[in-house]
Length: 311
Image (tube, rainbow, N blue to C red):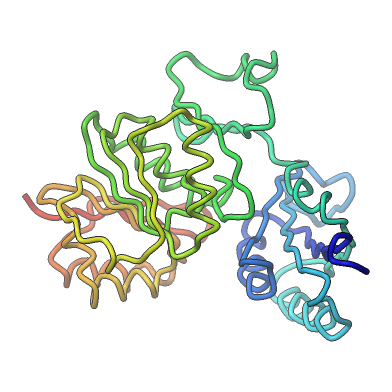
C-alpha cells in the first residue's frame, strides 16, 4: 500500500466517564502524537444493562506502519487487566483511510454547557441551528472549538473544573497564564470571560497549532501561544495561573521550578489533573511553596485546587 493510501488503525473502548480516564491513560502511549479522543455517546443502557447512563468511547489512532498483531495483542491484554478492576469491554479495531481518520472523532462530539455561562460549541456545528439557539442564553460565553488531535475537548472532568474556576475568578483586565494549554480551551475561555491578556504554553507543537486555530475561530486577538515549558516563560506576576496536567508534574513544578512565583500577590493558582488520593501531596506542595488552598473542587475521582498567594 502506498503512502498516498495509508490507513489508520482506530482502537476504541466503550466505558463510562470514570473508566474513560483510566483507559485513556493506558492507551495514550500507543496513540499517534498522544492523541486520545473521548466521545460522549449518551445513554447506552438499552444496549448493555451493565453500562452506566452516559457512555464514553475512548479512541486512539495508530498509523499503518505501527499496526502489528503484537501491538494489538498488547492493547487487548492491557484492557483485559484493566477490566478486572472495572467493567470494561474488549477493544474494537477498525481500519480507516487517511481522509476518514481526520474526521472520525468528530461524529459524536456535541455542544454542551459547563458551569453557569460557558457553552462549548464544536466549530463544524452551526450555533444558529434551532436546537443550539434554544439552549444558548444571552449572557453565555460561547467557546467555538475544533480540538483536533490535541487533548482538550472540554469533556474531561479536570478541564470542566478548570473552566468552572475560571468562570468564578476571571475579572475584566486580568492576565492569565495557562501552562499545558492543549487545545487552548482554558486560555480561550479566560479571554472570553474578560481577561485582557492570556498566554498559553505547551510542549507539544500540535497542541500549540490547534490552540492558535481555535483562537482564530473565536475571533480573539489578546491571546498568545508558544511551544515551551515553565522555564521558558520569564514573565511573573500573573493574576491567574492555571495548570491542568498531572499531580506529580504539578508537585515538581511547585517544589523545583517556582510555579507559585508566577502568581502575583493576591492572585490565584488553579491546579487540576489531580486524582483524589494525590490531592494531599499537591496541597502540601502549595503550602510549602508559600501559598494556601482557597477552594477545592471535585468531580468523580478528580480534584481541582484553587491556591492563593497571600496579599
